[in-house]
Amino acid sequence: MRKAGHEPLSLALIDARNHTLHLFGQYQRALESSRFAVPLLATLNPPLWELGHVAWFQERWIGRNLQRARGARCDPLQSRLASIAPHADRWWDSGQVAHDTRWTLDLPDVDSCRAYLLDTLESTLELLEKAGDDDDALYFYRLCLFHEDMHGEAFAYMAQTLGLPLDKPLQAAFTPPPLTVREPLLVPATTWQLGSAAGTGFAFDNEKVAHAISVPEFEIDAQPVTWAQYVEFVADGGYDRQELWQPEGWQWLQSQAAGEGRRGPRYVEQIGVGSGAVVQTRFGQPMRMQGSQPAMHMTWWEADAWCRWAGRRLPAEVEWEVAAHTAARRGFRWGDVWEWMGTTFRPYPGFAPDPYQAYSEPWFGTHKVLRGASFATRARMKHPKYRNFYLPGRDDIFCGFRSCTV
Image (cartoon, rainbow, N blue to C red):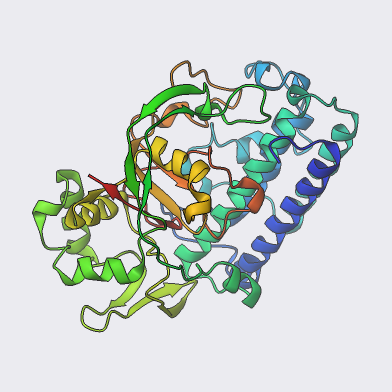
C-alpha cells in the first residue's frame, strides 16, 4: 500500500473507515447508555473524541489542504480551508487540544460524528479521483490511510484496557496464535541500508534518510519470547531480584508493587510457577494462554529484565530489520506482537520532519522503538521498515519482545 495508486487506495480508505466504524460499534454497544464515559487515563481517549479525530485528520490534510498535491513538500503552516464542521479544530486538533481536556469538551453526538466521518470520506474519495499519479500527489492519501489504521489499533488496545467485550470474530482475530518455537538464528555480518530509500513510495519521516550501517554477526530469536519462557523468569524470582532491573525499571516495579502488587505482565490474573499456567484477561474475559503463544503486555523494563536474567539482550533495531529482510526463509517470524527494541527512538542522520510535524520529532530521546506489528495491526500497515515508538512504561499495547546474544 505504500506504492498504491488510485483504485487500491480508494478501496483501502473505504475499508479503513468501515473497520473504524465496526470497532466503534463495540464501544457503542457497551458504553452508549453511559454516554461513552471512560476513566481519564493517559493511555485512553474518550471514544467519541477518537472517532471524530480520525475524520478531522483526514479532512485537515486532504480536504482543507490547498497544498495536498505537494506531498511531503507541503508547508504545514499554510492557511487552510474551513472545516465542514464549524468547531472541528476546537474539538479534535490533537496538537492544540490537551489530552486531559478532551473529557470536558462539548463533543457532538454519535450520529453527528458518524455523519462527519461519512462526509469527510466522500470528499477524500472525490479529490483522490482528480489527484495525480506520483508519490507527492498521493502522499496525504496514504498518510491518512495509515493514520486511520493506527487509530483502529488504538480502538482495539483501548478496548482491552477497558475490559470491553468484543464480538466473536474480533475476539478471535485479536488473540495471538501459538508459535512454533525454533532455535535462534545466526545472521552473518553485513552492511545494511537502515531506513526507507527515496523513490520507494510512501515512508514515514522517522524512516528517513536511509543510511548504511555496518552490522556485525549476531544471533537472534526466531520468534518472540513465549509464555512458557517468560514463566521461567517469574518462577526464578525475576520480579524480586533487583540486580536484573535497570534503576528506572526497578523504581517502576516498586511503584507498581505498592499499588496492584505487580508480579507479572499486565492483565495477568494468574501465572503458575509450578504448572506454567497463565491466565490473562482478554477484553474482559479471563483466558488461559498457551505456553507457545507470545508473552504479551509487558513494559520495556520487564522485557529488558527477562533478557538480563536469560543472559541475553534486546535487539538493536538494525539487527531486527536485517533479520526480518534476510532470515524469513530460515524461520524468522514477526507480526504477532509489537516487539520492544533495545534502541531509544532517535532521528536517523539527515532527518527532517514531514508536514505532520508532531508525529515523530517531539518523542525523540524519550521513547523506545518497537518493530514488527501485532495481530490488531492491519495487514497493509505491516512493513519491516516501520518504526513504532512508546514510552518504556507502556504495557497496554499488544507488545512482546525477542532476544539476542550478548
